[in-house]
Amino acid sequence: LCEYQAPTQRSLKAHIQSIHEKIKYSCNLCEYQATTQGSLKRHIQSVHEKIKYSCYLCEYQATTQGHLKTHIQSVHEKIKYSCNLCEYQATTQGSLKTHIQSVHEKIKYSCNLCEYQATTQGHLKTHIESVHEKIKYSCNLCDHQFTQQGNLKRHIQSVHEKIKYACNICDYQATQQG
Image 1 (cartoon, rainbow, N blue to C red):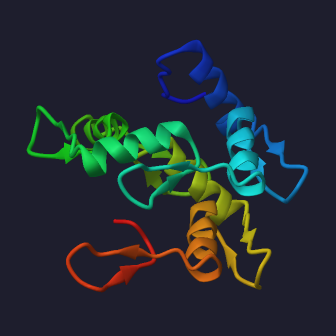
Image 2 (tube, rainbow, N blue to C red; image 1 turned 180 degrees about the vertical axis):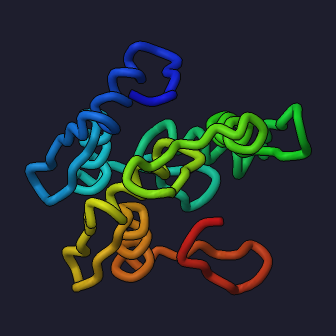
């Protein structure tokens, strides 16, 4: 089917279901569709049940304990993962793995509908959904539509929830954490 090599049987099954079989799990509270049951569960907890995990060092709130742990390690503990092939430093092990695969191993995931090549399977999935399947994510608070769920989430947080991230040097407040 493709060149993907899964580290575990479970991740191979998830890959086949989401990329090749296009299995979707639908939220019964909104239009959201997930490719895994775990993603659907996290969606329901973070969007509908508003479950948040708060950072004890700043105002950051994560939707999963794993995201909170990653935030603390990368932002507060300044943990970096160094590439042994160049000077690149990542804030997560996943980012380092993606860097090595895309930059040094030249692994690309090709769209079978056009010439697009992605550096990650997630980017390929997003490309197929937004460009070829024309999937749109609508804001339920206004008329805006987005091709990516992450952009909808950022829109809701910055425009409707008025979430701001303050600079620790001046009075500037950003709508995205960076």
